[in-house]
Image 1 (spheres, rainbow, N blue to C red):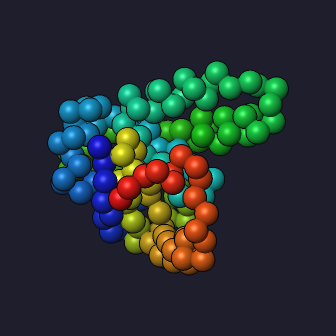
Image 2: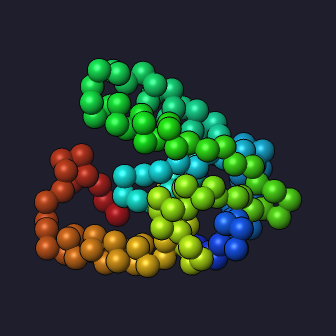
Length: 150
């Protein structure tokens, strides 16, 4: 499981170093083989390869005549890029993916259980504030979350 927030700087070539606390887990799970793709929230999703393969199988099975399903397939599968951790625990993020998410130097890596989200730091800060403000003004929870105790 991946959890927590890490602030990371991209180097001038677009490489991102994973925090050392994740490297052993990534080596054990996927031998450093990752897949990076886009998210509708304009961040990047970073999956260990085996996790991505499960997601990809589900996406491929969606009905191709459904317009929403096709859009999702085009975005997620179409942008999916395999990346390999190098000896220093870095991956090279391709320019089109960096451009999509607005990544320049300062980024935020968010552990999300089976994957990571990679955000531009300014975008992450603004969106987090937006989500917290929305949550503060609403007591509405989906039914399946109402019984959750934190």
